[in-house]
Image (tube, rainbow, N blue to C red):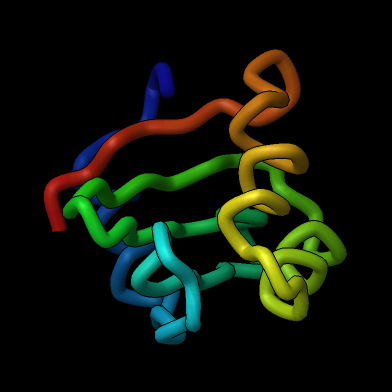
Length: 89
């Protein structure tokens, strides 16, 4: 995402606790309501932040039986709607 500093990334990471989830693809998810940032840690090691995600979308993913499918349909495939970055945390 353009114009986001490392300091901002670090602050979001610090203030976005990850919740372990039962999923074949996702290790943990977290949500920063103030910043509307969804954070996803994949079992493959990928660690992503998705920006502008409403809390309802996070709640839907969290409560879904298929978290990976719900994430993919609700966020990942919505590239024009939700900007994202890969982070190294």
